[in-house]
Image (cartoon, rainbow, N blue to C red; front, side, top):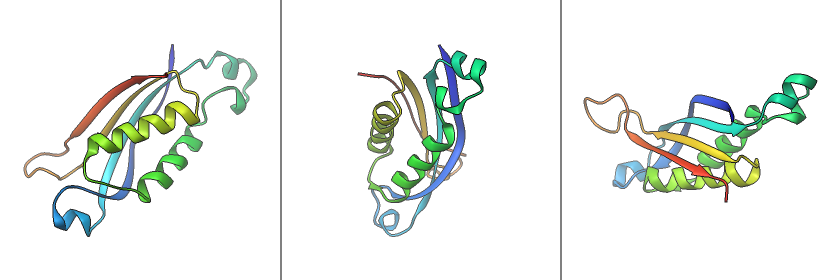
Length: 117
């Protein structure tokens, strides 16, 4: 299986369990590895034959910017569901990072892998 990826997609969102986090947007960083067969696109050079990473990024930006979650775990599951269902991706590895959430750490978050159901 081939992989189409998006690295370090940064989006501002309300996320967190503390009062101050509910009032101020924070940066969320996403890395996505999405299973995709790219052979047809490589032969035809037609974007309709592959996963359009720009469309995925736009959809996720719109979703995350408009969302409010307490946990990165919940956000990760929602993002995975969107990508798997709306873009017919057979498999996804997703990292959701919350840079600066822990003093002394560059980034914290979760990494999940999900197959299409």
